Length: 329
Image 1 (cartoon, rainbow, N blue to C red):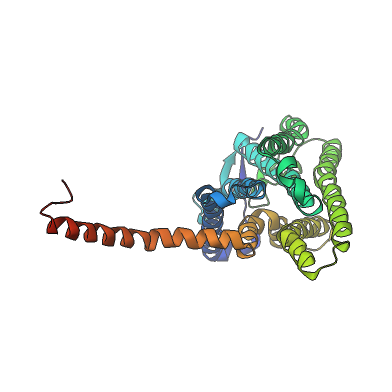
Image 2: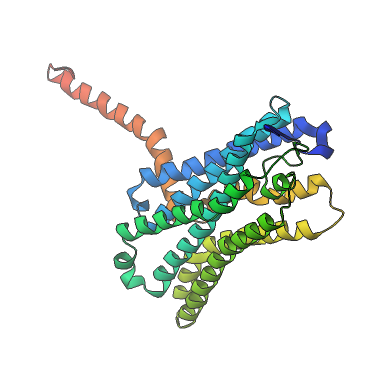
């Protein structure tokens, strides 16, 4: 029986492991810096203490968890330092990735609901989306994200793994690990497919419903300024939704295409895990005026405020010295 797995990484690009290592290291550093910056700016600026940025902080936290659950181990594999991963560690990574992905799907739906209330019922926004409602929504999002994939993953752990231990991937991907089992996996594949349908398409249908209502409400607005304001409120979220589901569709379509190399399949399968955690904060920070203002405020506090304080202290000392006093007195 297998007690550990070996992550092959990118089998067709072994001669480029150093280039891949540098590239994924930069990807990890950019992802960490971008998401930590969002968390820091939202906690620093009281103007960002609103439901939308509360949801955004949860999205950044999920992106951090996804990146740190994959990329550090991938860097160890590419460096040749530690290609093996324990049986428990592999399934823990698999469960984490599936749970984070499911949670992110539910969070995207929650953010769509927030935008729906902001556009369709702006006068009642602060009453409907209050602090208590936000905490309740996020509790439901995280609980569903970790409960939906739990059942079928428990069943997979109980399968016998007695053949090859080589995972033809750069992380413990569910279909790849499942294919190594020494048993009939059709029932497990069907249950996983059903769970994937629920976790992906139920939130998507809710998102589509909210945007249909938003579009109907926006079409009733007669002024160009109101239309532009409504679009700007939803543009970042629409961009994230489109990128997330388009990449998921490409991933699913790639599994059905025969003749693709292992490396191509691995890169396509890793679109959501590699790129989305880095892209999400850039979309919300580069297109958001309040986030830019918070960043400028933080920079001014650190680079200009200490200088002003020093000048004021020197000026105070001069005044005190004229009166025969010192600042210590």
